[in-house]
Amino acid sequence: MWDRLPKAVSAVYAGDIVMIDSTCVRVHQHGATGKKWIPAIVGMGRSRGDLTSRNRAIIDAEGRPINLCLTDGQIADCSQAEYLMECIKEGGTLLADKAYDTDAIRMTAADRKIWANIPSKSNRKGRLRVLTMGVSPEKSRRALL
Image 1 (tube, rainbow, N blue to C red):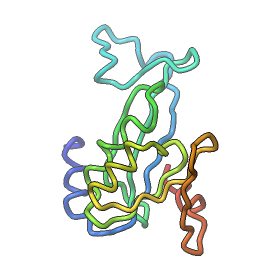
Image 2: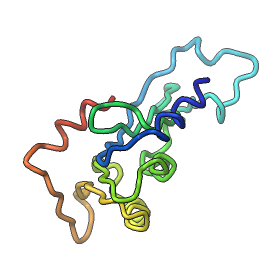
Image 3: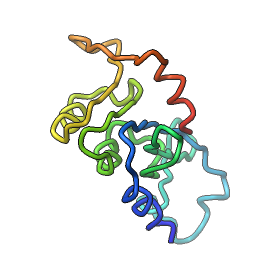
Image 4: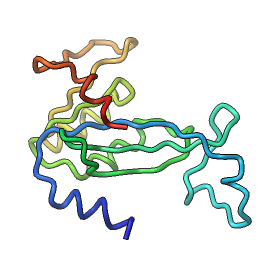
């Protein structure tokens, strides 16, 4: 049932503004002691010495989850964005933080006619402008996780 829930929610999703973000969760020391521990399935990885998992989500403007993903803690945020963006409808708006500022994500969004409102990283050559729409996108995005 839990694996079908995100697909059912994203099928009835009708909004046009979505936010993407992730959070890191430390796995308890007894959480990985099973005999049949398979890292690819459970999403536990080593990050700075501890076992961690990273929860990634796309939510709509009202805070309802549309698509979820659980990965190892050391996996970069931008690597899972394309999987999470599958549920965004054409013509939508994607709000994200600097961790998602890659050319690949911007190209995927442009190909799918999604407007990506992602601030540029400090080391990016040729910074791009971000439209704030009168409200701080950071403030509303923090309600995500």
